[in-house]
Amino acid sequence: MAAVTPGLVCAHHHLYSALARGMPAPPRAPTSFQEILEQVWWRLDTALDLEMIRWSAMLGALEALESGTTAIVDHHESPNAIEGSLDVIAEACAEVGVRSLLAYGITDRHGPDGARRGLAENERFIRAGGRGLVGVHAAFTCSDGSLHAAAALAEDLGVGVHVHVCEGIEDIDAPRRLAGLTRDDWLLAHCVHLPTDHALQGTIAHNPMSNLNNAVGYADPARFSNPVALGTDGIGGNVLESFRLAYVMERSADVTCGPDTAWTWLETGWGLVPEARADEVTWSYDPMDPWHVAFTPGIIPRRITIDGEVVFADGRPTRVDADEIRARAREQAVRLHARL
Ligand SMILES: [Zn+2]
Image (cartoon, rainbow, N blue to C red; front, side):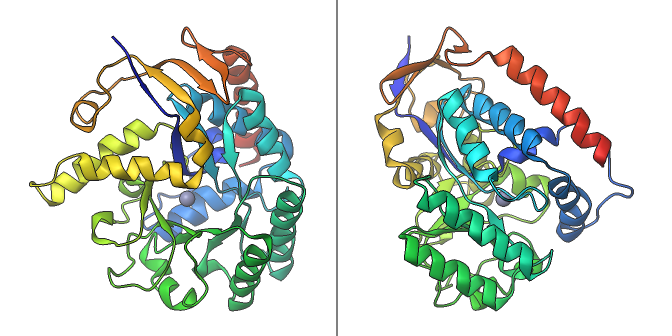
């Protein structure tokens, strides 16, 4: 028995975090979201070079494909390897055969020059024909000038902005800082501490696993009138897992809810990357309906076609060697961890 669905879309990913697994523990245990950023992610992203970015993207794209995810909406940061980074990620995804919608997350944490170079990378990539959004790390690490510049560039390029919003209480000011800038084509990641009656426009990317892991609280996305999509925030590329977790988290707050709402969040991904709707994933389980999938861990794809091409069959990608990708990614992880 098997069932076929369109390719799944991971609405918020950080492919560079594929190499974080096994990294040395920070000097002291972080006690808040801000400290998790400072001691884990902001140390990791400054140590990235283009070779590490390439193999983290290859591994992340491979793992996404192995989960039936045919499109990745990525948010990338590598302050010491900005120029060309989006090309490297796009090429890696294309090599594996997965669709991508990329963004370089600008920030003023490294001074105004860092934000300027980040914006330039978004602009260069998108003007050259790359599929992208303009990336912003978050309002709380950007000046008003940078936020306005990103919004203006996105408008000019005819794309949205991909930005973290109210992930932790550190970013509680985001709705005020972003007021008047957002549009329907923006992608707002997390929104855990975003008030229900906020005025921001755009799709909200819900990342239940990451929110639990960072102890930032429950976003309760059912309360928003914005469309809601599902991401992983870099913890793999398994959107079915995000769906299952989104459902039980919603259920934990409201025992009357069913998995149908979380399933509509999974479907919202096709609004972000419409081509994925034409991709075909044949799954190990039938039927692929919300009530079945919610209670069936371990469902895997048997066969995947993207753009008409078979890119996954018999448990393996057809275009790349999964063992080689894992081996090369491990080598790059060793280099990265040594820098930390
Ligand atoms: Zn994120």
